[in-house]
Length: 303
Image 1 (cartoon, one colour):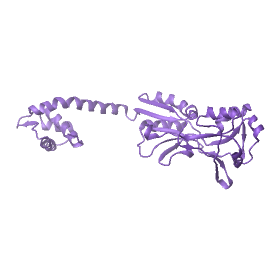
Image 2 (spheres, helix red, strand yellow; image 1 turned 90 degrees about the vertical axis):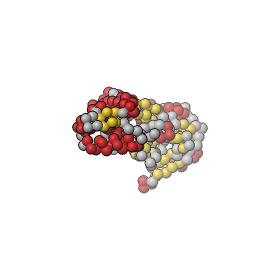
Image 3 (cartoon, one colour; image 1 turned 120 degrees about the horizontal axis):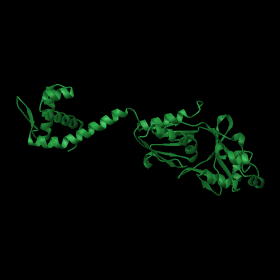
Image 4 (cartoon, one colour; image 1 turned 135 degrees about the vertical axis):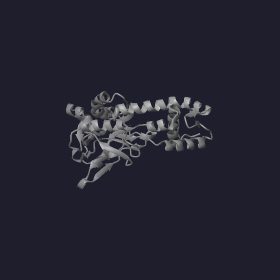
Protein backbone atom coordinates (compact mmCIF):
# COMPACT_ATOMS: atom_id res chain seq x y z
CA UNK A 1 0.00 0.00 0.00
CA UNK A 2 1.10 3.57 -0.64
CA UNK A 3 2.27 5.51 2.44
CA UNK A 4 0.61 8.90 2.95
CA UNK A 5 1.57 11.79 5.20
CA UNK A 6 -1.32 10.80 7.47
CA UNK A 7 0.06 7.26 7.72
CA UNK A 8 3.51 8.57 8.68
CA UNK A 9 2.08 10.80 11.40
CA UNK A 10 -0.10 8.04 12.82
CA UNK A 11 2.74 5.48 12.72
CA UNK A 12 4.88 7.89 14.77
CA UNK A 13 2.00 8.20 17.24
CA UNK A 14 1.66 4.42 17.46
CA UNK A 15 5.39 4.02 18.11
CA UNK A 16 5.33 6.59 20.91
CA UNK A 17 2.30 5.05 22.62
CA UNK A 18 3.68 1.51 22.24
CA UNK A 19 7.09 2.48 23.66
CA UNK A 20 5.60 4.25 26.68
CA UNK A 21 2.63 1.86 27.00
CA UNK A 22 0.70 4.96 27.94
CA UNK A 23 -1.33 7.54 26.06
CA UNK A 24 -0.60 10.24 28.65
CA UNK A 25 3.18 9.77 28.55
CA UNK A 26 3.19 9.67 24.73
CA UNK A 27 1.07 12.82 24.70
CA UNK A 28 3.65 14.62 26.85
CA UNK A 29 6.45 13.53 24.47
CA UNK A 30 4.59 14.61 21.34
CA UNK A 31 3.03 17.76 22.82
CA UNK A 32 -0.59 16.88 22.03
CA UNK A 33 -3.56 15.66 24.02
CA UNK A 34 -4.10 12.01 24.94
CA UNK A 35 -7.53 12.08 23.32
CA UNK A 36 -5.98 13.26 20.03
CA UNK A 37 -3.55 10.33 20.15
CA UNK A 38 -6.36 7.89 20.86
CA UNK A 39 -8.34 9.24 17.90
CA UNK A 40 -5.28 8.99 15.64
CA UNK A 41 -4.60 5.36 16.64
CA UNK A 42 -8.21 4.37 16.01
CA UNK A 43 -7.95 5.86 12.52
CA UNK A 44 -4.77 3.88 11.78
CA UNK A 45 -6.24 0.61 13.06
CA UNK A 46 -9.42 1.17 11.03
CA UNK A 47 -7.51 1.74 7.78
CA UNK A 48 -5.22 -1.26 8.38
CA UNK A 49 -8.09 -3.47 9.59
CA UNK A 50 -5.86 -4.74 12.42
CA UNK A 51 -5.87 -4.06 16.17
CA UNK A 52 -2.42 -2.77 17.15
CA UNK A 53 -2.93 -2.02 20.87
CA UNK A 54 -4.73 -3.71 23.72
CA UNK A 55 -6.09 -1.02 26.01
CA UNK A 56 -6.93 -1.36 29.70
CA UNK A 57 -7.37 1.02 32.62
CA UNK A 58 -3.79 0.30 33.77
CA UNK A 59 -1.75 -0.05 30.53
CA UNK A 60 -1.68 0.04 26.79
CA UNK A 61 0.11 -3.00 25.37
CA UNK A 62 0.91 -3.80 21.71
CA UNK A 63 -0.89 -6.79 20.25
CA UNK A 64 1.17 -9.46 18.50
CA UNK A 65 0.64 -7.63 15.20
CA UNK A 66 1.43 -4.31 16.88
CA UNK A 67 4.68 -5.71 18.31
CA UNK A 68 5.77 -6.93 14.85
CA UNK A 69 5.01 -3.50 13.41
CA UNK A 70 6.89 -1.77 16.23
CA UNK A 71 10.02 -3.90 15.69
CA UNK A 72 10.10 -2.96 12.00
CA UNK A 73 9.10 0.64 12.57
CA UNK A 74 11.55 1.78 15.27
CA UNK A 75 14.74 1.57 13.12
CA UNK A 76 13.06 3.59 10.38
CA UNK A 77 11.91 6.27 12.79
CA UNK A 78 15.37 6.39 14.35
CA UNK A 79 16.92 6.91 10.90
CA UNK A 80 14.48 9.73 10.15
CA UNK A 81 15.21 11.40 13.49
CA UNK A 82 18.97 11.20 12.86
CA UNK A 83 18.57 12.67 9.37
CA UNK A 84 16.54 15.58 10.74
CA UNK A 85 19.07 16.12 13.51
CA UNK A 86 21.87 16.19 10.93
CA UNK A 87 20.05 18.90 8.99
CA UNK A 88 19.52 20.88 12.16
CA UNK A 89 23.19 20.66 13.11
CA UNK A 90 24.34 22.08 9.78
CA UNK A 91 21.58 24.69 9.55
CA UNK A 92 21.65 26.39 6.15
CA UNK A 93 24.92 24.82 4.97
CA UNK A 94 24.52 23.66 1.34
CA UNK A 95 24.58 19.91 0.88
CA UNK A 96 24.39 17.95 -2.37
CA UNK A 97 25.66 17.90 -5.95
CA UNK A 98 25.82 20.43 -8.79
CA UNK A 99 26.41 19.71 -12.47
CA UNK A 100 27.33 22.80 -14.48
CA UNK A 101 28.10 23.36 -18.17
CA UNK A 102 30.32 26.24 -19.30
CA UNK A 103 32.59 27.28 -22.18
CA UNK A 104 36.30 27.11 -21.49
CA UNK A 105 36.68 30.89 -21.25
CA UNK A 106 33.97 31.05 -18.59
CA UNK A 107 35.61 28.20 -16.67
CA UNK A 108 39.01 29.91 -16.79
CA UNK A 109 37.82 33.44 -16.02
CA UNK A 110 34.83 32.92 -13.74
CA UNK A 111 34.53 29.43 -12.29
CA UNK A 112 38.14 28.55 -11.53
CA UNK A 113 38.80 31.50 -9.16
CA UNK A 114 35.52 30.83 -7.34
CA UNK A 115 35.15 27.06 -7.14
CA UNK A 116 38.21 26.50 -4.96
CA UNK A 117 36.85 28.88 -2.33
CA UNK A 118 33.32 27.48 -2.78
CA UNK A 119 34.37 23.89 -2.05
CA UNK A 120 36.46 25.01 0.91
CA UNK A 121 33.50 26.90 2.34
CA UNK A 122 30.98 24.14 1.64
CA UNK A 123 32.77 20.77 2.00
CA UNK A 124 29.50 18.84 1.79
CA UNK A 125 28.94 19.97 -1.81
CA UNK A 126 30.16 18.08 -4.88
CA UNK A 127 30.49 19.95 -8.18
CA UNK A 128 30.88 18.55 -11.69
CA UNK A 129 31.92 21.05 -14.37
CA UNK A 130 31.49 20.03 -18.02
CA UNK A 131 33.41 22.09 -20.58
CA UNK A 132 31.09 22.71 -23.51
CA UNK A 133 31.22 25.46 -26.10
CA UNK A 134 27.71 24.74 -27.39
CA UNK A 135 24.48 25.79 -25.74
CA UNK A 136 23.56 22.86 -23.44
CA UNK A 137 20.16 21.28 -22.93
CA UNK A 138 19.80 21.73 -19.21
CA UNK A 139 16.90 19.48 -18.31
CA UNK A 140 17.47 16.79 -20.94
CA UNK A 141 21.18 16.44 -20.11
CA UNK A 142 20.82 16.63 -16.35
CA UNK A 143 22.47 19.99 -15.67
CA UNK A 144 21.56 22.08 -12.65
CA UNK A 145 22.82 25.24 -14.36
CA UNK A 146 25.03 26.49 -17.18
CA UNK A 147 27.08 29.54 -18.05
CA UNK A 148 26.59 31.07 -21.48
CA UNK A 149 26.42 34.36 -23.32
CA UNK A 150 23.63 36.55 -21.96
CA UNK A 151 22.11 37.65 -25.27
CA UNK A 152 21.66 34.05 -26.44
CA UNK A 153 19.83 32.48 -23.50
CA UNK A 154 16.45 30.75 -23.84
CA UNK A 155 13.57 32.93 -22.65
CA UNK A 156 12.19 30.28 -20.33
CA UNK A 157 15.34 30.31 -18.23
CA UNK A 158 16.25 32.42 -15.21
CA UNK A 159 19.52 34.22 -15.97
CA UNK A 160 21.92 35.86 -13.50
CA UNK A 161 24.64 38.18 -14.91
CA UNK A 162 28.08 37.19 -13.65
CA UNK A 163 30.40 38.82 -16.18
CA UNK A 164 30.90 42.21 -17.87
CA UNK A 165 29.57 43.09 -21.37
CA UNK A 166 31.55 41.59 -24.23
CA UNK A 167 32.56 43.02 -27.60
CA UNK A 168 32.69 40.97 -30.78
CA UNK A 169 35.32 41.47 -33.46
CA UNK A 170 35.90 40.21 -36.99
CA UNK A 171 39.53 39.24 -37.44
CA UNK A 172 41.74 37.92 -40.21
CA UNK A 173 45.41 37.23 -40.78
CA UNK A 174 47.57 39.88 -42.50
CA UNK A 175 48.22 37.39 -45.33
CA UNK A 176 44.50 36.78 -45.90
CA UNK A 177 43.69 40.48 -45.94
CA UNK A 178 46.59 41.21 -48.31
CA UNK A 179 45.27 38.63 -50.75
CA UNK A 180 41.52 39.22 -50.45
CA UNK A 181 41.25 42.81 -49.31
CA UNK A 182 39.77 44.37 -46.19
CA UNK A 183 35.96 44.51 -45.90
CA UNK A 184 34.67 48.04 -45.34
CA UNK A 185 31.05 47.15 -44.55
CA UNK A 186 29.46 44.01 -43.04
CA UNK A 187 27.74 43.31 -46.37
CA UNK A 188 31.20 42.92 -47.96
CA UNK A 189 31.52 39.64 -46.07
CA UNK A 190 29.49 37.97 -48.82
CA UNK A 191 32.67 38.12 -50.92
CA UNK A 192 34.90 36.65 -48.21
CA UNK A 193 35.60 33.21 -46.77
CA UNK A 194 34.18 33.26 -43.24
CA UNK A 195 34.75 30.72 -40.51
CA UNK A 196 31.33 29.86 -39.10
CA UNK A 197 30.43 29.62 -35.43
CA UNK A 198 27.87 27.12 -34.14
CA UNK A 199 26.00 27.53 -30.84
CA UNK A 200 24.03 24.29 -30.85
CA UNK A 201 24.01 21.24 -33.12
CA UNK A 202 21.14 22.81 -35.09
CA UNK A 203 21.94 26.52 -34.87
CA UNK A 204 24.41 28.23 -37.19
CA UNK A 205 25.24 31.65 -35.77
CA UNK A 206 24.72 34.72 -37.93
CA UNK A 207 27.33 37.40 -37.48
CA UNK A 208 25.75 40.41 -35.79
CA UNK A 209 26.84 44.02 -36.17
CA UNK A 210 25.82 47.36 -34.70
CA UNK A 211 23.60 49.03 -37.27
CA UNK A 212 22.19 52.52 -37.53
CA UNK A 213 20.29 54.05 -34.59
CA UNK A 214 20.88 51.09 -32.31
CA UNK A 215 19.63 48.48 -34.77
CA UNK A 216 21.24 45.07 -35.20
CA UNK A 217 22.50 43.97 -38.60
CA UNK A 218 22.77 40.18 -38.96
CA UNK A 219 24.80 38.70 -41.80
CA UNK A 220 24.66 35.11 -43.02
CA UNK A 221 28.21 34.01 -43.82
CA UNK A 222 29.79 30.99 -45.48
CA UNK A 223 33.26 29.54 -45.73
CA UNK A 224 35.46 26.48 -45.45
CA UNK A 225 34.92 25.72 -41.76
CA UNK A 226 32.27 25.84 -39.04
CA UNK A 227 33.33 25.27 -35.43
CA UNK A 228 32.38 25.96 -31.82
CA UNK A 229 35.89 25.79 -30.36
CA UNK A 230 37.80 29.11 -30.10
CA UNK A 231 41.15 27.39 -30.56
CA UNK A 232 39.92 25.91 -33.84
CA UNK A 233 38.28 28.96 -35.45
CA UNK A 234 41.07 31.31 -34.31
CA UNK A 235 43.71 28.87 -35.48
CA UNK A 236 42.02 28.68 -38.86
CA UNK A 237 41.93 32.48 -39.07
CA UNK A 238 45.64 32.75 -38.21
CA UNK A 239 46.37 30.18 -40.92
CA UNK A 240 44.68 32.44 -43.47
CA UNK A 241 41.65 30.24 -44.16
CA UNK A 242 39.22 33.12 -43.70
CA UNK A 243 37.78 35.71 -41.36
CA UNK A 244 36.60 34.77 -37.87
CA UNK A 245 33.99 36.35 -35.60
CA UNK A 246 34.95 36.16 -31.93
CA UNK A 247 34.99 37.79 -28.53
CA UNK A 248 37.58 40.53 -28.13
CA UNK A 249 39.10 38.86 -25.08
CA UNK A 250 39.57 35.59 -26.99
CA UNK A 251 41.70 37.29 -29.61
CA UNK A 252 43.64 39.83 -27.53
CA UNK A 253 46.94 37.90 -27.66
CA UNK A 254 47.07 37.28 -31.45
CA UNK A 255 45.96 40.90 -32.07
CA UNK A 256 48.75 42.23 -29.85
CA UNK A 257 51.26 39.96 -31.58
CA UNK A 258 50.11 41.00 -35.05
CA UNK A 259 49.08 37.48 -36.05
CA UNK A 260 45.52 38.73 -36.56
CA UNK A 261 44.05 42.08 -37.52
CA UNK A 262 40.60 43.39 -36.52
CA UNK A 263 38.35 44.67 -39.31
CA UNK A 264 34.93 46.32 -39.37
CA UNK A 265 35.55 47.75 -35.89
CA UNK A 266 33.06 50.66 -36.36
CA UNK A 267 30.34 48.00 -36.58
CA UNK A 268 31.69 45.81 -33.76
CA UNK A 269 28.78 45.19 -31.36
CA UNK A 270 28.77 44.86 -27.59
CA UNK A 271 26.50 42.25 -26.05
CA UNK A 272 25.62 41.00 -22.60
CA UNK A 273 28.43 39.01 -21.02
CA UNK A 274 28.33 35.64 -19.33
CA UNK A 275 25.22 34.72 -17.39
CA UNK A 276 24.53 31.72 -15.21
CA UNK A 277 21.12 30.32 -16.07
CA UNK A 278 18.84 27.57 -14.78
CA UNK A 279 15.27 26.37 -15.51
CA UNK A 280 12.61 28.76 -14.26
CA UNK A 281 10.44 25.95 -12.92
CA UNK A 282 13.22 24.57 -10.72
CA UNK A 283 13.53 25.76 -7.14
CA UNK A 284 16.91 27.36 -6.54
CA UNK A 285 18.88 25.03 -4.27
CA UNK A 286 21.05 26.31 -1.42
CA UNK A 287 24.15 25.00 -3.17
CA UNK A 288 23.44 26.85 -6.41
CA UNK A 289 22.39 30.00 -4.55
CA UNK A 290 25.69 30.01 -2.65
CA UNK A 291 27.67 29.57 -5.89
CA UNK A 292 25.80 32.45 -7.57
CA UNK A 293 26.50 34.69 -4.58
CA UNK A 294 30.24 33.95 -4.78
CA UNK A 295 30.34 34.50 -8.55
CA UNK A 296 28.57 37.85 -8.24
CA UNK A 297 30.79 38.94 -5.33
CA UNK A 298 33.91 38.40 -7.46
CA UNK A 299 32.70 40.68 -10.27
CA UNK A 300 32.91 44.44 -10.68
CA UNK A 301 29.77 46.27 -9.47
CA UNK A 302 29.20 48.10 -12.76
CA UNK A 303 26.95 45.66 -14.55
